[in-house]
Length: 135
Ligand SMILES: [Zn+2]
Image (cartoon, rainbow, N blue to C red; front, side, top):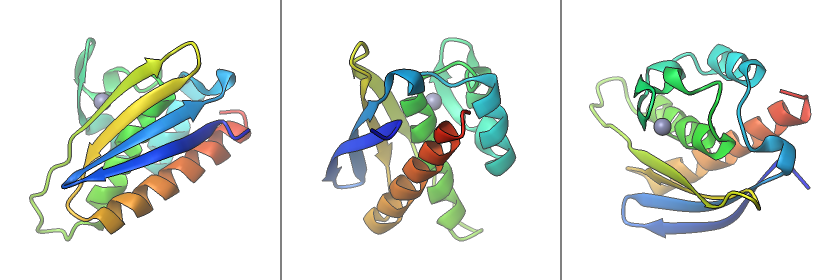
């Protein structure tokens, strides 16, 4: 089993909802994984993020759920595909459906469904590579 599996994709107007299953060793981020993703996605720490520790994703990036990191990666990749003059903003939300089983629901907004699906596929394989290497 891959560390991260997208079991279901639900597309509504402007909104993508994923059902994500995480292996038991791939539920939480670590300092090592956080350093790796910030190296590859330098804007990630500045993402606005609703969390108990602060206004940005930086506050929790090294100690949050892997599905929450997936959410922010999908948003980051969508922002990268927007033209420079774009004022588009993207929002997301992640929650455990069954934390003991490692099943989470990840919702992200989009402007283009094709872009969102590309971002989803890339973010998932990126995280699977990183986690397989022991991040
Ligand atoms: Zn967040």
